[in-house]
Amino acid sequence: MTTQGSDKQTGGTGRRALLGAAVLGAGGAVLSLSGTARAAEQAGRGTGGLPVPTIIGHRGASGYRPEHTFGSYQLALDLGADIVEAGDLVPTKDGHLVCRHEPEIGGTTDVADHPEFAGRRTTKVIDGVSTTGWFTEDFTLAELKTLRAVERIPANRPHNTLYNGRWEIPTFEEVLKWQDEQTRKRGKQVWIYPETKHPSYFRKLGLGLEERVAKLLHKYGKDKRNSPVILQSFEPTSIQRLNTLVDNPLVVLLSSAGSRPWDFVEAGDPRTVADLITPKGLREIAGYAQGIGPTLDLVIPKDASGNLTTPTTLVKDAHAVGLILHPYTMRNENPFLPAGFRKGTDPDGYGDVFGAFRTYFATGIDGVFTDNADTGLLARQAFVNG
Image (cartoon, rainbow, N blue to C red):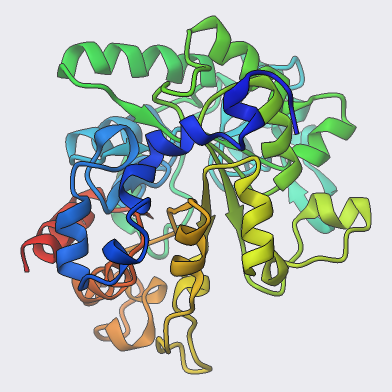
């Protein structure tokens, strides 16, 4: 644990208060309320005074625009997202941070259409997975800026392909400037929620992410505990490293229960996510982070047919140690919904997403990542007023 200031020494008490300890401090009194009453009790008292459940625009408004573009980020704000996930941070060859879902960009840019980069196509092993394509760390920023973004899942979002080629790859520094511009234009604070991607992999390449993130946040005065920037990562040690560099609110992302964070794999730590979501594991996380971002299946598991079963105790257990929960990811299309909420078999058809939102909100989660911020806001309104 860092010794930089009392806030960090106490596991981020001040930062946790910002993220909603005023709400969670009521403990069982709040959590024992019905879902509707609880949401009404918490409304307007979450992250930075934002409504709870907080609606987080996943990679912007990626249900309607190619993800991690200013077109997607801008639309997420226009649709009313409380926070925009801008963006997933990966480095270039010359050390700049850019916003891509993964370092492999064959599926999210038009790089395959650039003959000058045909020789860059290669196969790499990232977090134990062999992947073939083009990778950001093999390009300078100037080279990446010649590419344009495309829709990542065209089979589910054919309408998004209309916007292929309209936007370039944004840098994290451009995002920070955009955040300030949008805050001024809209007359209210815009929040962002960037993620460090594959930090162990990039550190081995001499392209450590956390120091670069911290340097930019410091440059723009956004490295404080009340700064409108929440940082997240699937690797707990990345969050621990950030905890020594900045005072921002920090969130540990959690994948499936049987999976192991890659930094654990590299360090020989045998623990899985299932170990991290025990009361003991959550207490440990609360020592250096203020929240968790679990997959929705950790909140309500599915059976073999894809139907929701009984909620776990994760929400209660996390709240008991002062952690907020921002699970991921709600999407409108049938294939991404629990089986009981699908309508028809059309892969790009919408199901009963309002019913799904209502079910997850009723567990007491503090917010949710969604590709469709407008749907999320309507679902929250119905839930709070219901």
